[in-house]
Length: 399
Image (tube, rainbow, N blue to C red; front, side):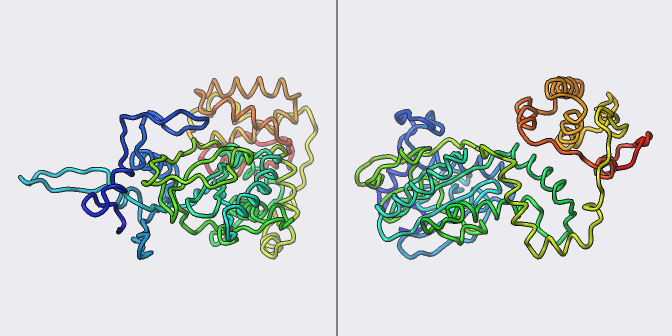
């Protein structure tokens, strides 16, 4: 078979993968690019291209189902595109019928894979962990692997992760060195562990190798032993209790999900749970000894906005053209300390408009759902210095 289906040796598989982009697939909830028709090659390629644009470390590889040989890990598109030489020396390129493509796990993605002996056991295990995740506010993407297992993909909302990083840095009061993984990387590893362990209950067993997220996983719409990896739904109740087999024999086409990012129902509760676990980590104790940030104790009177924050509020800040998300984090917390949430939000929306609307209003609204936190002047001054903003005014009081 090789890495690519060949029309000369297996026309049925080759024809099935290429499909027919003129025949539109039946619409279903969460359909990804239904306008691309019923072509596995076209749908999968478009999906991989979108992922590679979002993730600069994106890697992919092809597997030969017969020999289990692999191509080298490389960037998109790899062998999924072929370059041809015409009879008269003219060059052209075309989409190839790749059989089994594997891809990177994204930075904001968590993959949970069951590997019990039968599909029925994996189906039952997926329903248990799925119910836990959905109850906590996450949106699992359930896929049948094409053999016996079920893959669950969870994409964490970018706005939540950005807010979480700021919150954790402030709450933990530590600065990571160059050789140490950033706090957000550690949080994602912790969250993967929580999900894969069924939130420490060990109710069912899942592949622990995916905690590190360094493996490639089978890409959506790629061939396994019995069929192609296909989307089953966003709820555990959407899964079929019998395997939904899609292959060149039955000509049933696999589905692919539209990515839906999600965040926990109780974000602060989740972050505080991570903080308690991380404080018992040896790394935290080692870093804390070398930091003084955790010893800075805020002592600010309510109703008094600091001059360093006023510098961010001024129209001159528009010239900085950088750091607006971290600026918003600072402003949201400072304004909520000084005013009620209604007035604080009004002021930050006004600031965002004066800055040329660099931030999405829904991201601003999301920040007001999180716990407010009093930031130190040292943190604010450090940020302003980092982006090259000249702080000419000094704060009236030190924190």
